[in-house]
Amino acid sequence: MSKENDSVYPTKVVHPWHGVSHGDNIPEEFNAVIEIPKGSKLKYELDKKTGLLKVDRILYSSVVYPHNYGFIPQSYCEDGDPVDVLVIMSETVVPMSMIKCRPIGVMQMIDDGKRDDKIISVCVNDPAVNTYHEISDLPTHTLREIRKFFNDYKDLENKTVKTFDPQGSVKAKQIVKKSVRLYKEIFIEGNGPKIKKKKNKKKPVKKKTTKKKKTKKKTKKN
Image (cartoon, rainbow, N blue to C red):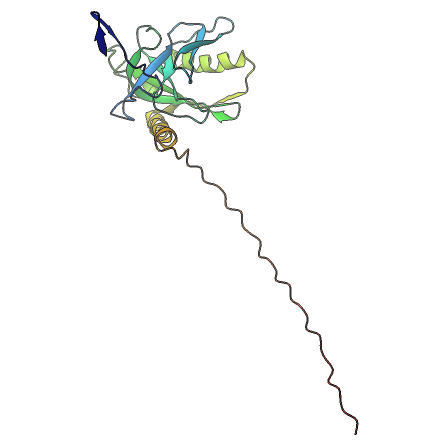
């Protein structure tokens, strides 16, 4: 920060995806940056180039986001974006807020052929929900609400999505840990994601054999 004429202003703009830490206790806890507040029909999305929030679309019908929704900074998913996270808490927060979260489960989805996992988490600093450690701890209606939301808002947009049964905290932590490792490989080490390539077995090349011509010995006549 710089001070000039009794005013304080930032000298550098921090990119929400690349400039914000995911936290020091991955995967047990992580920071989440909120894009969409609870109850919104507007789908905000991070513009990866500028770091600003852009209005992507308005959700069809009466579907609204059941909880605050955002992403884990410095993480990477198969769809080329940071990992999505749904943050369960008692209050609605403004976009671009940072929240300390604990993963309790995951909704695994395939969207247009690509993995699009949704980490389900609770706000660590909210006493109304911070006693939840597993997705099975949630009230039944809360879990149904979450599942219905992810099924409905994709169906209404005629998108081909496959949704799997929700998994618990162990699977969620595995995905978070892997996403942070992928981010490091791509953006810090610059190696790109490690993808095992199938080795093509080369067919043995048959050597051509040349037949030697038999030469007849000439016999001298006496």
